Image (tube, rainbow, N blue to C red; front, top):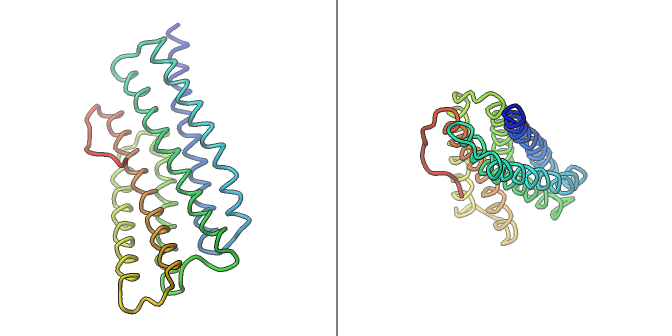
Length: 218
């Protein structure tokens, strides 16, 4: 029974990595679709989101069964509880990637943002993809040094997010109301994607060390 239990715990961690890999693909394709007005990629992200949802739901069922049948303690318990919380955040990250892709599809063949902000959004997208890649490695290795790197990347995205709001509220902004709404939503999506990744990183730090690092994204 102990061997079966350990195999189940390994499966939990492997499934988290699998979902994280799919989220990385989703945000990579979503940001490219957004920045390049690629409707084919946008529709691919939208269609694939259900796979992330299904895997997250399946992982939750496995974790709940382990809690009910195996009654884990100490680190084993932390693995299962952390998995339940992480799967929820990963599912939300997939949803955010889908939202970014939906903006690209809705505005096709036009680009979502005005030329003056395209470089800003390209950098936000690049940082989101980097954070997603680091998150996958973090889930594989529990190398908590990656959590610090992710927080630094998140700080950069926060600064870009503020700069977008400064731009649309400034006197030089010439966009229509729909442009302002699109840009505001898109910036928020990019920022929240990174926030959820950093939230997961804190949970992995807890798993690795047994010490909580602070509040998480909701």
